[in-house]
Length: 198
Length: 164
Image 1 (cartoon, each protein chain N blue to C red):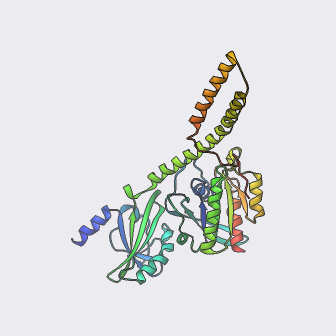
Image 2: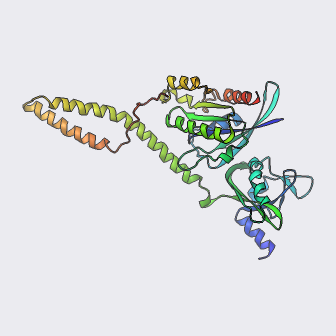
Image 3: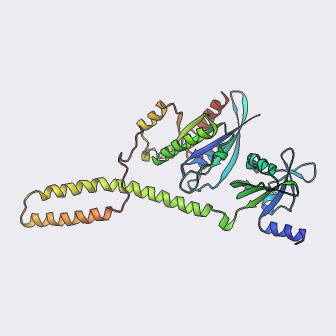
């Protein structure tokens, strides 16, 4: 594979490779994908560029990266996802530090498609919030339902006849149905709706 | 120029990102957008004659899907522990994160933000709970990222505590 083809491939894959230079500067090893080009501040020294202003997370990651570079050639460190706003667009990125041909490199990937977990986590957390809301609503139902159940049981202690007995019987059936319906709902916290701290 | 790293810690959907957006850009959106990974914003301020650049690390909310890593806390000078006043479970998450932060970086200054003050009628964390936190020695500020109430005060309070 020739160099030009490799560079094109990396650009299409939203991957940039930069070499770490002294003084918080970087040298682009491969052409920058369009989304990253806006992140570089060109310096007077030609190919040396700064990323700290738009990607301050990288400065923090350099500690871990430095440890990986010191373990060359096998050292490798991954940053985990980090977000940045480049050219007004929010992008999710990940950096990997490796050493190749004795050069300390950072591979900066833009996480898109399946690698961008934001939509999945968004849905999951929205479901969790819905469940919490359901638990709060269930908490509001459980207490009065238990009171109704107790009242029906208290009524059952007495002897009734005729229409009243029929009404009590219907109440008992409805009470059992209510208890069955709310049984699967989340049980409220023992302290009730508001909390105190001990 | 003094530079300080400050982390926003708390459960998910407590308003960490909204608090940063309110403080840095004076904006608020009602739409909940889950944070993945870390996002860093900067804010410059003058505290008692000292120019400070606050590097605000908005770290994803801790839950079953994502756990805050000690490496992300390294180097922080202080942190804001955010609780959603309408969800009492987020206070327990905050306590866990406070313990984790202390273990990771030692006893650095922090402030607990009881957020979503604009929804005070729906709060599950009541006055006795609030005063218990204060009695425990925690600095607590009630905030609303939506209205901005308490937000600037909280960040500046933390900045002062870090510079002391």
